[in-house]
Structure formats: C-alpha cells, structure tokens
Image 1: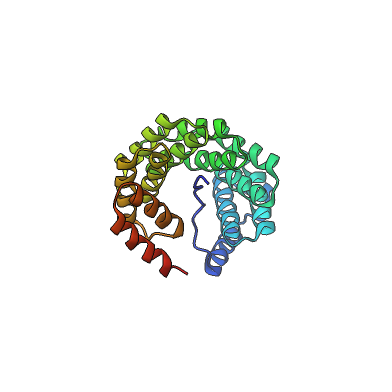
Image 2: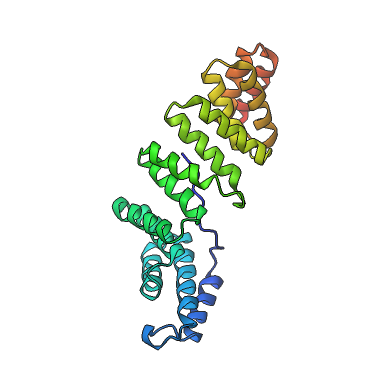
Length: 245
C-alpha cells in the first residue's frame, strides 16, 4: 500500500489542553466576535486540535474541531485535508474524496495532501488517478520526503504494470535519498519478478543493510539468493527467518 503521510502531532493530553486554552484565551468561542486577525489564528488552532484528536483516534471530536475551523475559514486547506482523513477513517469515501479535492483546489502546492489523496485513490483501486497525483507531487523539489513520493509513484506504476516507469521512479527515489530503504525493497521485488537476478540481488542486499528485515523481506532475499547462486547466504537468511517468531 502507498505510504500516506500522517499529520504528525504528539498524541499527548498536554497538547490538547494547550490548544483548548489557546482557543479560550483568544476568544474563539463566538465566531462573530472575532477580529480579522483572530479568525485565521482560530482556524489554525481548531485545525491543530482536530488533528490532535485524529492522532488519538477520537474521530467525533476531531470532526467537531475541524468543522469549527471550516466555519471560520471555509477554504482552510489543512482543515479540509484533515477532515478528508477523518472521513476516510470512518469509511465515508465520497466525502473523503470531496474534501481532498477541495483542499487541493484551495492549495495546489499542498504536497502532503496530494500524497495522502494519492494513497486514498490507490486504496480505492484508482491507480491511474493516484499516479497522476504523485506525478504532480513529485515535482515539488522542496518537499522534505520527496524520496517517499517517488517510491509511492513507483509502486503505483507497478500496479499498472508500467515496469520501465516504475523502475525509473524507484531509482529516482534512491538518487534523492540513498538511505530510503523501501525503494530498494520494491525495486528488488520488481527486478526479481522480471527475471533480472543481478539487479534484484543488489537491491535486496542494500535493503537488508538499511532496514531491519521482516519475514517477507527475508523470504524474498532467500529466493533471490538461491536464484543468484548464493546458496550459503540463502541458508544464512533462512536461519534468520527461523528466528523470527
């Protein structure tokens, strides 16, 4: 599954308390009483509160806070995206899609939302639309997790059986961040499926150097090693696999 980027806030009670105090002190309880300066601050605070509740899986309160943010600022892209994530979590897929689209209409440069929308589309089986979103998102050279975007794009191309494009996307991810392990895993899987044993072997070796292997990774490493004629290494991977409960 394509990796979404979660809205990251520490799920602490102290954070929620601080946000609630901020809202109370700024007089945000009554929409009509807010000054022009208070309105964007209030919308931001309610959005952060909603995201904090979302991180704690308190979807009802998350939705309440985000609705409040959107009452104050109907085009608030971060609130719209967070609300899309709430609806997605609740299984309200039509509403989730609508809110992702609204967020991106209001903030086309909101790359995190575009990546999360792509993950949503991928889960819905709409691979072509997901790839389109990721193609756009990956053009953001300033996005701090750009290697993840290209890796997601590679996975999306694989789902459409566009092997050459997938390979290029995964190699681009590695060029941007040579230590992003997931790109090597997917490239090893792709190359092995195409009968390209040497590049598959190189990729899985790099992956195992960068990441703590799970059962699936070790099993693939075993298969590639045997296919590549590395029987002793395959046996070693087998022993590691047997030690995983």
